[in-house]
Length: 301
Length: 301
Image 1: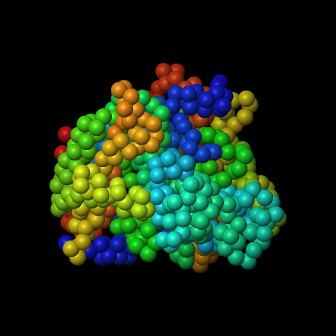
Image 2 (image 1 turned 120 degrees about the vertical axis):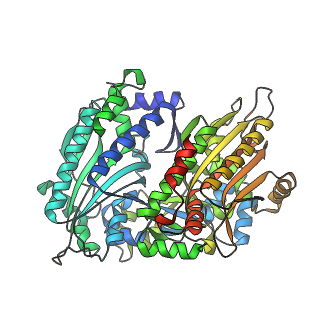
Image 3 (image 1 turned 180 degrees about the vertical axis):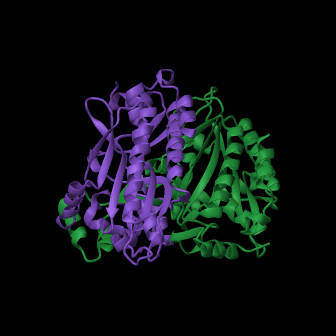
């Protein structure tokens, strides 16, 4: 068993991982090959559950987050886009400044276009106001969560790759979906020879008004996380399995044929955390890895 | 021949494309299947040229853009990230505001973390200060260019998917690479039954100090674009082929074995524009499309 720090240092030394900002990294070489294989494996798992894949837009309107009560729940994570003013004089001042990057930062216009903290919001937004029978959708993309001083490469990235499966429908269907997601994720961890554990978890709701939700989560066991070891007796939550009950159905006016608000659940994988846990367990040298070809072929059969 | 507006309206009506902000869209259904096939085809083309693929980080430090003289060249496009303050009281004010999205926008801290306007900057940043022989790398990812009122779905997106191939090396190698890129892109357009034309082009340099670069580009034919028709006698630049001469080699201190600054060139594809041109040429109904299976199989042989 290696350590998270050891793995990240080794990948940096080999040039297979590099940092462009706290928690924002690039990949090449063996680390990238492995990341892509894990992505494919998890995508196959998702496609078994979700007949339909969507391409998530790379941004999300803040009004969607507002509708989801995001700002009382997880405001600390929020990352959004700013751009420069569409004004010749202002641009000229930036272009001719001796420190143009600093000048650009000062002149930037903040927009109401957020970078997605999770992908399921796209699904609720698209289904808003719809009557539906149970639907399952999968999406992948970059998610952004600013975690200040806690940011670190692979383990807790500002920008990370999420694969999410979202089920909207009857209470029974969405809980069955969530339970199947837990079994599939546990089986994947076994195939990768990772020592997974499931924990009942809660989201880090911010506002006192939202904290009641965490109590309900815990009491009803609505959120589980799959914990993978990353050395030094620590683990990382590499996947989460969330039953939202009717919260998003009510917030977005999504209803069942009966007219009742739909329930929803999502299963979300953090790809860089799977990569980290795999490398902590098996080392950064591919010759010491369990045979991935056999592993992945078996998964496909 | 259909029109760009007609195609976008038809995809929106079918729910295969939706807008979350000006020039920021999601895909599903047939449009997504086609986009993925075009992505694969263009990735295969890139892999023939570039033995190595990198995963582009989803952000870029502004100091890299500064080094590339970006702020006198294309400041108008710049999009960057802001996040909320790491301050309980400020977050509480946002969480309890009656218009939290607006409050969040006002309180946001602008960072020096840009969303990439192109992917080649990642390559120059990584090669900065290196001695090298000719290297070719390919990357894909979301690029951001804010174009104000000109933004439109597919044709001119704020956030779009770029596939880029970057060659850094001797002047002869990088120009040969660029010429091969033009031939490969032209052959791809033919296989897709698209009526491509190549144009000598210039970049829209902003500052008077930078405009000399556009004159050099035109006189020396350092930039070509592949124009694909999108109806109403209009076309879109679906790929560009750029010889930067020693500009980035000098700016980033990248040198050849001789000690001279390296030259560079890049070939960049805008995926959503290929999708648009394909749908304008062949319509949104897949039964009227040229046989993609044959097309793609032929490309692989």
